[in-house]
Image 1: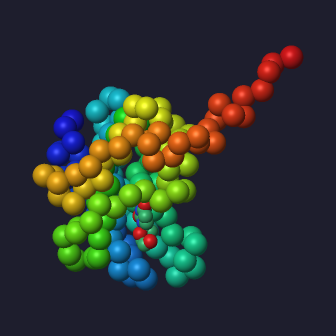
Image 2 (image 1 turned 45 degrees about the vertical axis):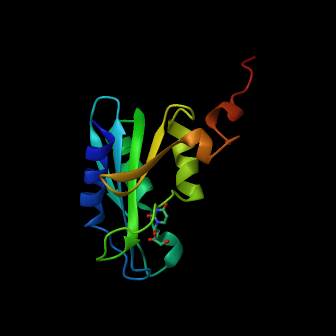
Length: 141
Ligand code: THU
C-alpha cells in the first residue's frame, strides 16, 4: 500500500475521534506485513490520563487480532472539524509502544496534513537509543 492510501485511511480513522475535552482529533492507520491496515483514533476520558492516542488504538487493535508485524503508520491530527494544518508527531508513549514491536530503521512514521502533503521518518529517528525488549534479554544459565 502506498503512503498516500495509508494517509487516506488515517483521515477516515480520524472521523471516529472521541475528543470532547481537547477538541484535537487524531487518526492513525497502521500497515502490517500482510497488507492489513488497522485504523485508530484518539479516545479521551473525563479522567484525562485514561485517554488513548490514535496510534496506540491502532497498534493495540492489531496486537489483539494477532498481528505484530508492523511496517508503517500514517498519522493525521488537528482541531476537530477542520483539515489538519500541521504535521502531527506521535507522543512519547506511542513511540515507546512502537519500539516494542517495530524495527527502528525500517518502521516508517508518516506524518501527514493530506494525502499529498506528508513527511516520513523512521522510528529510530524519532526515538533514538530506545529502551526496547533487547535490553531485558538475560543470559540463559
Ligand atoms: N494524541 C494522539 O492521539 N496522538 C498523539 O500522538 C498525540 C496526542 C491525542 C491525545 C489527546 O486526545 C489529544 O490528542 C490532545 O493531546
